[in-house]
Amino acid sequence: MKSDTATTAAPRLTVFYDGGCPLCLKEVSFYRRRRGADAIAWVDVSEGTGGDITPGLSRCDALARFHVQEADGRLQNGAAAFIALWTALPSFSLAGRLASWAPVTWVLEQAYTQFLKVRPAIQRQVRGKMS
Image 1 (cartoon, rainbow, N blue to C red):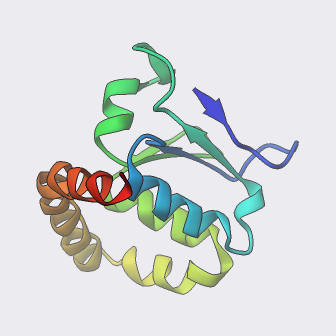
Image 2: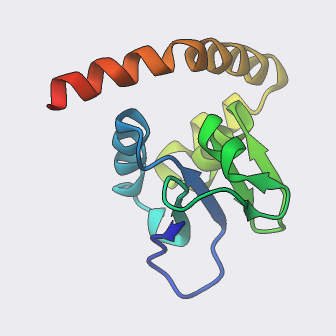
């Protein structure tokens, strides 16, 4: 597991991402270029084998679904994790606040769950274009 944290202060948020997934890597790269991203710890969970990434989060779970850990130690996943990330980035904070409204969160979670079903096929397609 590799942490790409740019700061020495305790991060506001820790993002766990699959650096072996071309889609995930592209999206994380996008967020890392945003203002405020230097206060976030970015942890590539694709490296290494088995074990827990952090208490309560296995490597398998971290690779299967998007997770973040808030400064207070709470783990979020799926739509809630994206909302936490958006809220932490100034240019996305309004989207984060709007998405935290329960009906919007529910719709985002449903969309993310459906995306996860087709993600392997999209990954194969993207990897094929990269070769």
